[in-house]
Amino acid sequence: MATLQRIVGCVLLLGMVSWISSCMDESGFTIVWEGMEVEFEDASRPNNTIRKIMTKLNDTQVDQEVVRVNLVGAQVDQPVNLLLGVDPTSTAVEGVHYRLSNPEVTIPANSSFVDVPLEILTGNLANEETPNLVLRILDAGETKISTNYNQLTIEIRLSCPSDLAGTYSTVTVGTGGTVNYEVTITELEPFTYRISDITGGVYSQTFGAEDNPAVFTELCGEITITDQPDLVFGGDTFNGTGRVNEDGTIRISWRTEESEESGVTTLTRVVE
Image (spheres, rainbow, N blue to C red):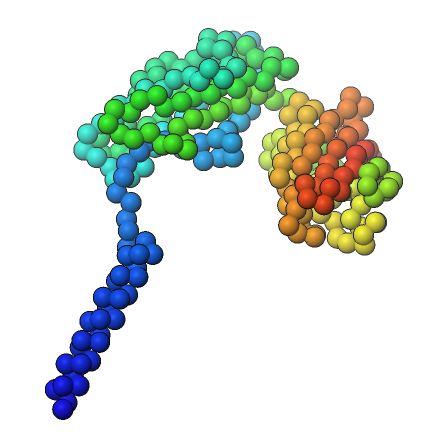
């Protein structure tokens, strides 16, 4: 009897193992991707875009940058030869804004990437120029080219002095009426700032809620706010644009995408 019970138990155990294995196979837990493809590393950024902000010191300045191309998958014992090209949508001009000395590059054998040299001709840039260099992977031999990350846009921009950190008195006109308030701007890194309340007091004074901080970038006086979370009411995002005026005041136009709250906030630095 005991022997029969052991046999039945073993059969049930084997059946359970088989069932679990089958479920894992169906769910994909045991599936390991064995493919191989090449991609631009930075193409995983929003809109397949990165920004290179250059600081111009003289009219002959050339800055050395690199663009990394990855081999996704297991390394191979043979080199992977690549051909890069410039997409027709590119507004950057070869020899004026950049130089790509050799579009034919190689990921070495037993390696996972290659860094492609790229020269930015910073000395030729003017403040009002906004050239975009759009690179594509055109050929990789027998290796697959990534469908999603085969193109990379490099926004080449010239920096200007930026010093917005401080305390500001604000006047906001918008869906919340006219609101007077005070906010603080903190520098996170060059050209990137956090404002203590993107609504300029609307959430606090109109709705009795907390301030909603947000991060914005500023480049040569132009302010950009992109997909900043609504931390107070949730489920929404702030977007906007702005400008640093010649007299030092700041004007920011902001809005929420879902609730459609909006306003134009004028900021005046508080002199201590």
